[in-house]
Image 1 (cartoon, rainbow, N blue to C red):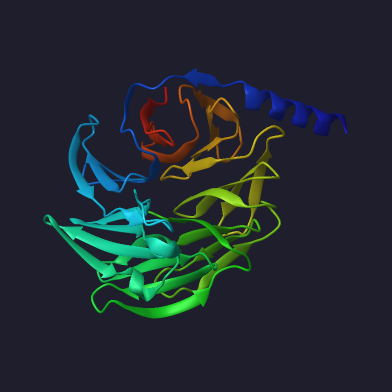
Image 2 (cartoon, one colour):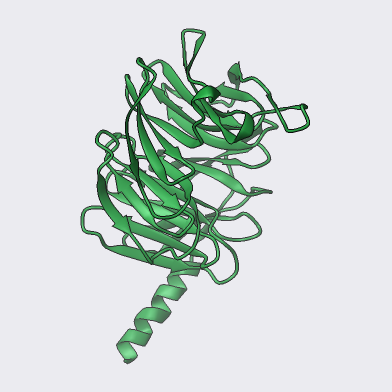
Length: 318
């Protein structure tokens, strides 16, 4: 009993013995950062302002891709959300909000934009990622996933992912897995090429998944009412949980070698970097002034973050 108590005390102590860090570089794009991809030495950003932005590593805006505004029920024009973005080679894939809750999917290459799924298809999609140059996987509000042929502009396959309503989706960098988190707290790992379930995790996160990230063989997810940050091992089916008693876990991230994870769980928008194996709190990232929507690792020592109010910050782990 004493040894067990000492272990718990040591673990709790380690969770607070961290190094506070401030950003080494920052900018503001004056639009919410809804999704972000790092590719080709550039930063590709989906916003809520009817535009996709492409930045260089110095945060200079290289290109703006406009997306049409949409009409509300009064007939007024409003900026569209760009729900998600992906990049494969020299082609950009982005999913945009359309009227009546529907979505439109676009390819962009060499200055040309192609609508490969328009609102007439009446698809309620909330995320889309490349499977390969000819196919994409889309997550629907109904907790279903579509495998979509980008050339034929047709659904190849459709299947049910979870048992609730969709909340968030992420894809591993090698495109081996997608991870879907839903309103009920389920985390579902799927092979995007076949839409077959690889693993389903239940009753770990016990409420709506607010953020999910995946790379190689691990996924991380943060949830709302139960305020839990969970680390899932796809191979073994094991999991670890950090619970926060004060605030929901609104953003997550994991690095390429699965050694570090990031989560946000407080009202001061301080992000925490932990060791995936030991759950030791290594760093706190201090400086955001609003909810952080996106965390991306550039490498094992450099992180990019993007917020609801357009703050983009770069952090270097010492």
